[in-house]
Image 1: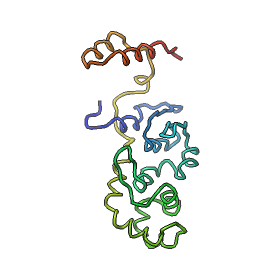
Image 2: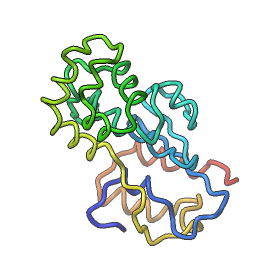
Image 3: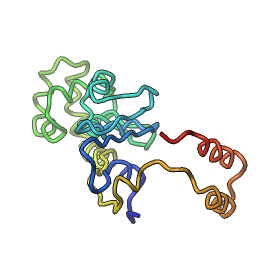
Image 4: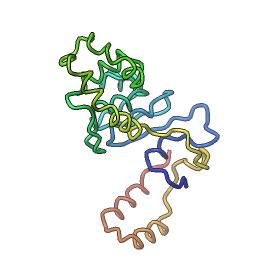
Length: 193
């Protein structure tokens, strides 16, 4: 167990002793998990409920997955109460990510924003400057650590039948109702492949 970590970071980090053909699938309602597709190791099911692979994410959002934290820092993300820069939507953020290598590059070259063919370009550099601190904080919040030492190998993560008595004890201790109990029973019935 990685103390002080959240589930996103645990999901983003590979097991130790990763096999060469190891492939991870993430299923989540959070868009920023698409950044996990770096190195082609993962697929994410994002808010749009589309199964996204590395090229599809860029086609869908207009930004490469490894730059998604920068993109969300600009647009904001309601899911995590990240405000973004007022007036910067998906098209503007995508255009900025194509014109600049990173948020650092963008902020080092704010005068270049005036030369971009973007709606509101005249005031955009002022808004970016005004919200610089919150943008960089937002990038920290949307960036997912992918190099935690999990202390588990690939074999420890392979799917196996649930321990029904242990689950029943857990459900009883935590006060889970019949819905989760039935769902656990259904999952136990899925054939192992």
